[in-house]
Image (cartoon, helix red, strand yellow):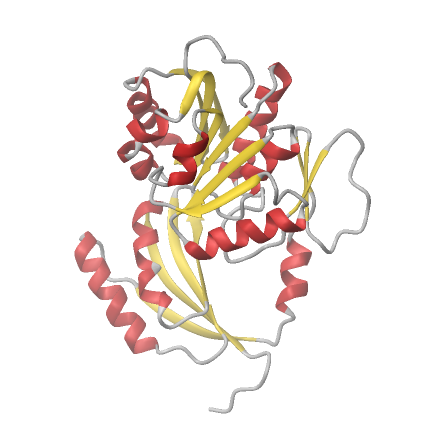
Length: 303
């Protein structure tokens, strides 16, 4: 088969599973496609899709998907491969990424030349290999929750666990924090966050690192934090509850996201056992953001 520049293929693994299970099927696509994603086929029902610049190996994908299905005890899914018409993907992504206003935050791509609204905190974020441009229910929930916190008080130090593009750490800096630490388990995400900090003129105050949870010298050096973001998934949020909660200063707040509505009660209970109280819950579609508060007197601004 001849392949022309601009050709691309779409691979769909037709599933009807929850989000956590759908994530596992991404592994069936990683060696055969250049980009992967989960998508909803119904409320809280997910499938996965990949895109490739060359013809993907359908039999190999089908074999991998069958093995994953067996491991999760779900029905073996069908796999379809479709050649797409030539597309200017950069223009296509930009077209779909409209500026977002979330509270006082204004999130826009580099293709937008209009001045941001007055009295807003502008952040330039382009769609990239890392998660977080503000349009997802979990990210937007975090930004709205943080905006509400900033209406009540100043914030001096921010920690962003599972930073993705770095959008939440940069939001903290744009809103007046003097320092933000952003970590992710994915080195590529950390590289994207670092570059976004440079693009937004925040490099001097944004400290990035590769870390599994909160195990990193950067985090230890700058603790405790007035606000901690943890926008990951329900299972790791519960697993890391002691470590993440321990980073919140007395009088500080923890913003938890990446959890489905039905998972919120279980995640919230894990953090209440760490001495935090539920201050607010925001539901954005099927996604929930929890704001947990650490009782105690707020400390003086950090050194």
